[in-house]
Length: 212
Image (cartoon, rainbow, N blue to C red):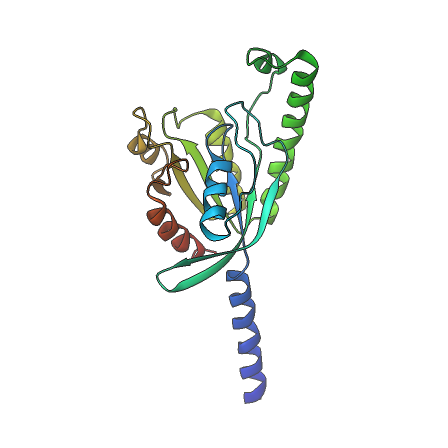
């Protein structure tokens, strides 16, 4: 009986350890908030490779892309993540928006269709996430319908959340406004582009892992 209890405890601890060592971490947020930039920064820091292409044009990422087994170390501890970079969430996508950016009509319609499908794919992937980093543009209004919708979906699924208030390198950035909008979550101000406050981000990421 004692041997059974020991073996059972070992299996339970082993399962917990395995889960913590292969964390599916999703990057969610509105278009152009810097999700791919942050995922790229993390991948370059720990693997030397990027995960995707960055563009100033909205919805550059229109399909879920991921990077397996990214080992991140912080203060002597190591966690292994599967990073999942998702298309930007939007309540409405109009192909005419792309026309104003110099994209031809046919390509604009195709891009809008792919972006819409990408949003559906992003929501579907939520069911596989162990934790999520919500990436917000700290120069924009955090009380938008899109941000509230994203957070609402995460709350409904009881997924642990870390909010990255990105683009602190810009003068208009207001991290405190993001903190005020979502006081129940940890918010860390970063610049994925410049690599600002990434040490603080990694510390917050390890805290997030403990909530899984």
